[in-house]
Length: 206
Image (tube, rainbow, N blue to C red; front, side, top):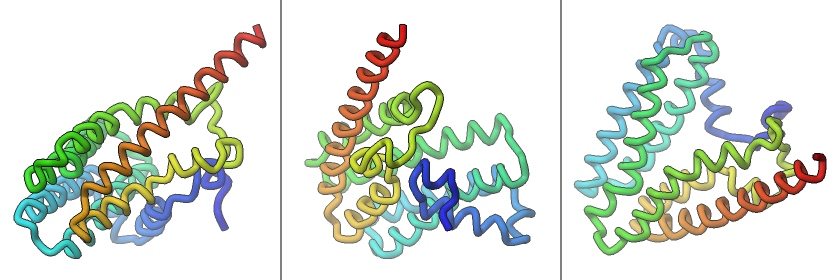
């Protein structure tokens, strides 16, 4: 059964896996910061394998493992009720290295895609801030039903992560960048519409 919170935010298969992983007793002995650090080293390995054009299947499997670890460190931190400055710094570093792997490393292999990749990098930096504006209206997270089908798609990280994996697998990464850039434009347009509607609603209430 999908929990109430998941109905609001949209079901996330990676979060669901991570929550099951942290239920195993051996995992509880691990440190959330240790998992984050290990995932950073895994990203380094993935970068190297991409550059030498190693087996795409192995790269995709490792990337899936990395995403699960990305969610597991947060789930474990919540399970153990542990929050630290080091953990926040590692998480910040971790996400920026992931952007390098996704939007910069492939450009060394396919120089002609630099423009699409550059736009993708820009949007990947802008969207998290815009997401916070769009995700909340009056401090309350809107339900999937209220956001509508289009915005549910825009919040679907599983879809975006796996389109990147498909691009790597079939050596068609250019289509991932094109899709990501279209996604970003749609997302920014959607949040702009919500921002305008919210302002109009507030103005009427005054």
